[in-house]
Image (tube, rainbow, N blue to C red):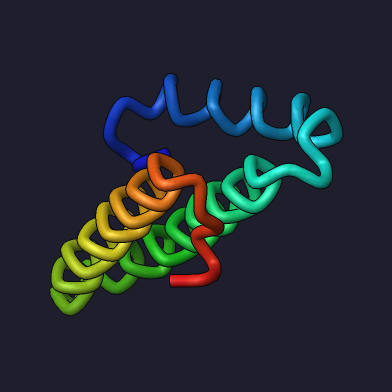
Amino acid sequence: MTSGFFWPMTLASVVIIYSRKKDVVGTIYFEHFEWLLYTFWVSIILLMINLVLSYIYIGYLGIIITITWVMYRLSSGFLCLLDDLSPYNN
């Protein structure tokens, strides 16, 4: 779910999440799936905007910030998953 790093695995993860989402309703994993999907879609949108802005060089800073934000979301969500917590309660 890193929106650029290992993109085939990222796309496979999104497909798996959408296909298994109904199976985990009511569990802690549903919130983690929502967390990952939100991170994926927002990062895709931000990277597309920053790609356009890279023509005036400000986009490069935006790409770095977006990647940092994605890595933060992935690591904090994973730590919550290890502790059986919702990522939204952090």
